[in-house]
Length: 383
Image 1 (tube, rainbow, N blue to C red):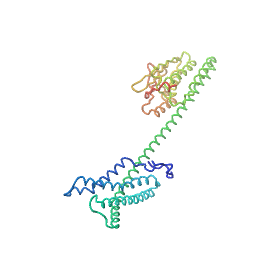
Image 2: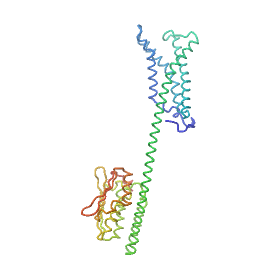
Image 3: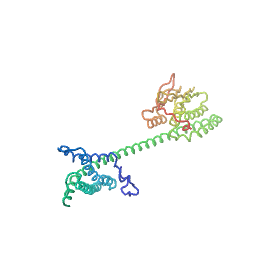
Image 4: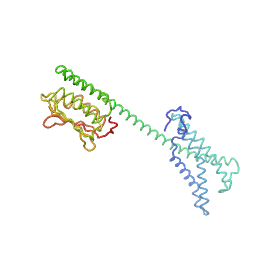
């Protein structure tokens, strides 16, 4: 993690900001390095003629402790400086170098003093320093040796942290890009759906107007049905989701309105199994297919025809069919705003898993089939 605001104060950033990146794996690595250093310093003693296991273990653990004394101030200082220093590379790296130099020196002084005390106490050997100058020479010698080791591990830490931050930024960029694409798709779908709504509304009102010229009683009845229809349909038109049962009910209301206009020239049937009525179906698609079948298939015929709506499953797919006995394929059967919008909405919502297929009916007409992933909603969410 990097700082979201370089001006954040410790009061607002908290201890997590100070030591972000200091993980148990990192602590374990520091312990392992100190242990290896202790082994490196004491392993030659194994080849002594008077080698004894117990004193060697004590020497090895003491060397491990000297290394830990050095690592104790350096490790948190490097992590905290990396997290709190300004994000400009030159400033951050200079601050880290200064932190390593100071804390490593402090650690070496403490470690050398502890080691000297142990030596003078006779824990192992007679390596007492007779004068203060000898102690400082040993401190600077250890500082040169351990300083290079501290610098090496600091470089490794900075490289790994920079790689993690780069990967996190790339992942966040991918998430932002995916979120932006999703928002664009949703906006595109709303635009396509908004094109369908006036298309259906204007056609229906045009039918009412024509009926008023030929049969005012039927026109009044049709207008009453239309008002009841829109009382239910309008609040749902802009919903992102709907159900097959709800869309079938809306389409049935629409077909009842059309039957007033066409009279005996229109017959229709709806066969939706109860188990599929809660299946998810995008709004207005079924209604658009029914409207397209009447407009391009049945209405142009003097005798009219029939329209059947049915639904079934094919594995994990939902298939919704609108079959008519109209004119069959014409120049506008597979095109137009309604069908083009359905295809675009299916592609935006389901990708290749959502399709609209048109086929010839027998003996005449067209079968339009919506194929999309089957998803059943709970009854509560379908209301």
